[in-house]
Image 1 (tube, rainbow, N blue to C red):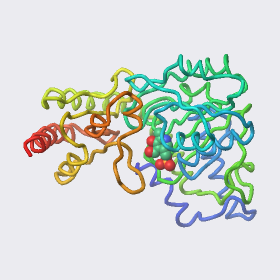
Image 2: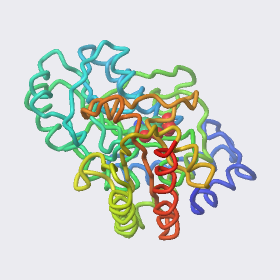
Image 3: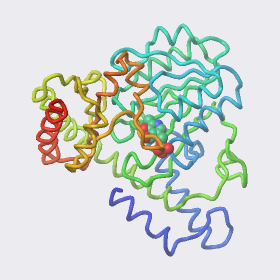
Image 4: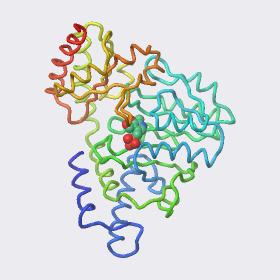
Length: 361
Ligand code: PLP
């Protein structure tokens, strides 16, 4: 976790332990902290404080957006084929429509336009993808929704975008915006959904009526305060981080593609976030490569980590037109604000050796 988030959260794990739903002085102290955090989060999401619904993470925020908006306005739900499962499965659970993407992972705007009609009430298109980093043309999506399905609300999963992009600006046209603290230096298990005026969500968690009856349950005050601190720290350093990490990513991706025969970069660097380096190594299985790299002290991923830890051929890569064989030979190297030249040097040494070792088997 980021130092700012840890420092912000500690008092609420110790002496400032009040429940903000109470009425006495200790509770009022917690309420004050909650209100301050809400203002910070609202500012960074480009909405009013009253629009912010604190949740138990990104998955819950996405489910509240889709199921909650659908409950208020029953109709057809539409999402892109490269959404995180939190959106994809929530959409499929409601019998929704999945819109294809191109080889870069960018939504097919013609296909989206074709499927939008008077029956559609919820559209969900993520801001940045968690596997390949592709940034979606959200303003164009919003314009299409406004023209062809003006009754629909537009949700964007900005969970992966926040460290790299100004979400308040880029998601300004979305009615609903989901974020998750652990993607930008905050704790796990806390997130938020911005519900702009004009949109409404029915609760998916019922109880004491917290968050203006949109999300019941005693607030995770320490987590929420830490999320706000992490948002502040992330956005203050964002421009610098994007530049620094983008340079590191370029060196890593260029270095791997030139050092490893049959290495192919996934997607298009001009349409992806700075921290994403995604490479396919022909003829190897990513799972075997990840084991070798892990033993050597380099952490990388393939597909998306699910609860079992098993790696499935990624639905994102399949939607981008990769074959199953290509999808299972792809690896994602994620870089972040704390990544260094030394990390890149290590990867540039370990990965070519490990690929060569696997190919020699
Ligand atoms: N959406 C995206 C794009 C993600 O990358 C993730 C997590 O990796 C989620 C949603 C789910 O967020 P959480 O882990 O906070 O439930």
